[in-house]
Image (cartoon, rainbow, N blue to C red; front, side, top):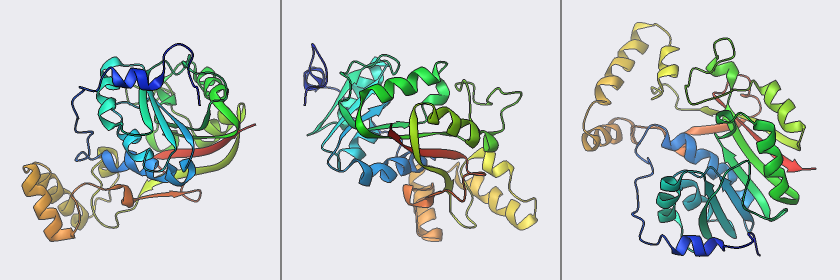
Length: 269
């Protein structure tokens, strides 16, 4: 399957075989949240040609290629693309590219994954149209973005300084429907029972009951321990890693209204 005109995907990859393997944040509080979206995508990419847009350092490529026929990661940042090469193996590659001007022919991918990208862009509709252009007929877009009903931008301005715009579920649905057919619209939420979420915004919303605040205090103390000690204590106390894993996240339409992140499964019209 020929995707680009003058320079092959594997040609780009082969030029950077010496790139060092990196730690893609697997021991950070955010790893489970991000990895969960790629695990959600696995059954939908099985045997498919997949584009992972804004792939960053490439951890998603390493997950998707377990199931996909071929995965191409794209990022506009050269250093990120170099690091992402470490996640590549058989049936995968990385190219430099701008999400608004992708270096691919029309209709060349079966699935596009775009996780936590659109909120960083000014021309969001142009971005969606570019993703639609490279999707084959009947192709699928898996796209996620923060839920403004949870993050609560101030006067329309996101609290995250790197975000241009955050959508409410209704706004996101309206924007996506201008280009795609929406098959599923889900909320991604953390399900860890009475354990403490590692995210500050979640901790701020905890009940002020003494029992909860004591748990929060001890969590913050443990969070300052060296990594090895923290992990050993967590396994001893809770029989699991200190930070949530991908298994701790639930995707559900019933949770969409209050979930921190929204994810849509769309199909090319």
